[in-house]
Image (cartoon, rainbow, N blue to C red):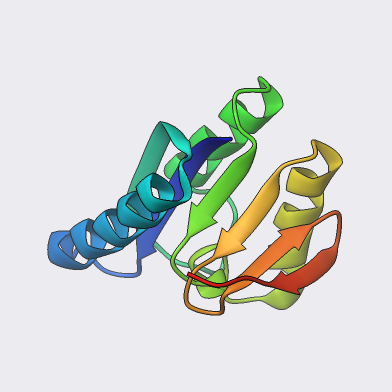
Length: 116
């Protein structure tokens, strides 16, 4: 599976971004995924208009991604309606979203637990 991971912090905090990236990289390697990209940024979770999030979506639209890894669902957004909109875009392109903290896999609008 080709994995792309996305990290976000609200404020410029490179330590927290690095920690998220390392956690996601470790999981991807243990799961046997091929890491095809990583995007990280600091910014508000109240909008989907963020460069790194768009970078992930461009890879999804280009068919380069099977799974998007995030440390927590709130890294996508703080508003559930907006977050679901992004999830719907992923599932339209048959891309799974794995949220490590919640230990949930979101695939075609189905939420399934997974073990780490």
